Image (cartoon, rainbow, N blue to C red):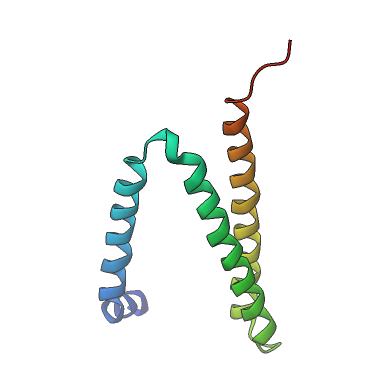
Length: 102
């Protein structure tokens, strides 16, 4: 019964998250491949902000608040993976446009 009560209490937030997922899929699905590199650069900047925010949250959290520390650590790890992956994908895409050496 705890899960049902939680869902009932957060029903509006759940609907907003579901709507955000569908809107995000539609927006990303309609992006032409030419715009991939600028969008990846923007995503890298956003994830850099996420990493800094997570570090700030972890720094201000109390030492016994394991939830904040764990979520902050997870955000740092996942944000770092996204930034690194974004740079790798951008580099590979830009490599396609470079002239081949003979």
